[in-house]
Length: 521
Image (cartoon, rainbow, N blue to C red; front, side, top):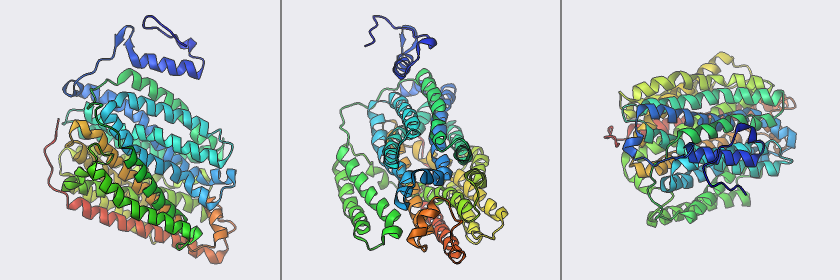
C-alpha cells in the first residue's frame, strides 16, 4: 500500500508500472500544485472564455479518441471478421455490441455525472476506455473481443455524456455555439482520420493496432484532464439511481437490435427474431410507465413534454440514422463490389467527413446568429439531397465522382444540423440536468446509429443466399457469382432509400420545433 503523511511528488522516472501510473494520475487529480487541493467553484465562477477553451482542449482529446474508435473499425471490420473466422451474426455484433452498450450506459452515466460531479467521472471514463482498448488488441477469440467491446462502451459512454455538459458549463452563453461548433469539428476530423487510420493499420500492421493506437492519445487525455478541469458542485447525492430503468431499457433495445440484425439470416418469422421484437414491443411501454413514476428517472420524459425538446431529440435520432450508415455502406461497397483493400476503402469514404470539417466552423458561426429551426432543417435537407444522389450511383459501373459528391453533401448537411440542434437543447436546460439532457441526446444519437447499422447490414445482404452473407461481411466479393451482383447492389440502394426516408422525417421534426427560447446561465 502507498502511505504518505504529506502531499507526495512522484518523479516521472518512478512511473514504471500500471499501478504507479494510476497512482500518479490520482496525485495529479488531487493536487494541482504541491499542497494545494482543487476547490469546487460555482457555475458563475466556472464560466469564462479562457477556461472554456481549456476545457475544449480537454474534451477534444476524448472526442478524438471515441470518434476514431468508431470510424476506424467500420473499415477494418472485414479484416477482424477474417482473423476470427466470424459468422455473419458475430460480424454484426462486433459493431453492435459497442453501440448497444454505449447507448444504454450513456443515460445512466449522464445522471451519475449530474449527481456526483463530471470531472471525476470524465477522468475515470477516459482511463477505462484507454486500458480496455489495449486489451482488445490482445483478444484470443471473438467472444473475449465482444465482452471487452461492451466494457469499452462503458468508458466511451462516460466520455461522450460528459463532453457537451463540460463545454456548456465552461463557456459563457455568447461563446457556447463556437465551442460546440469546434467540438463537432474535432469529431469530424476524427471521423475523417478514422477510416484512413483503420484501413492503414488493418492493411499493414494488423487489426490490433486499430485499438492499440488509442493508448497514447488516452494517456495524454487523462493527464491533461486531471491538470485542467475544475470541480463544480454536484446537484446532490440524495437522489437514487434508476437501475431498474436501465435494465428495462437495455433488454428492450437488445430485443429490437437482435431482431433487426438477424432477421435476414435467421428468417423474419423465426422464433428468436420474433422473440426479440416482442421483447421490445412489450417492455417499451413498461419502461415508459416505470420512468414516469420515478422521482429520479434515467430518462427525463418531462423534456418530451416541451415541443422544442421533443422535436430536437427526434431530429437528432433521424440525422444519426441517416449519416452513420453511409460510411459503413460505402466502405463495404468498395471492398465487396470494387475489391478495394481496407486502406483504399477508407480513402473512398473521406468525402463524408470532409464535408463535416468544412461546414462545422461555419455552422458554429451561423448558430449564434440564426434560428436553430432554420439551420437544422436546411442541414437535414442537404443530407437528403446527398443520399438521393447516391441511390442511382450505387452500381459496379457508377463513376466515383458522383458518389463522392453525394457523400460530401451528407457530411456537410450533418455538420450544419448538429451544432445549432445541440445548442438549442443545451443552452436552455437547467445546469443540474445538463448531464441527463445531453445523455438523452447522445442516447438517441447512438440509437440512430445502432438501428441504422443493424438495418443497413441486413438490407445489403437480404437477397443473397445465406452462405454468401458471411463472405460479404468479410469484404470478399470475389467469389460472388456475376448473376448475384445486382442483388448485392440492389441491397445497397435499398439501404440508402431507408436513409433518405430518415432525413425527410428528421427535417419535418426539425421544422415543427418552436421559436428560439431564452438561454439559461
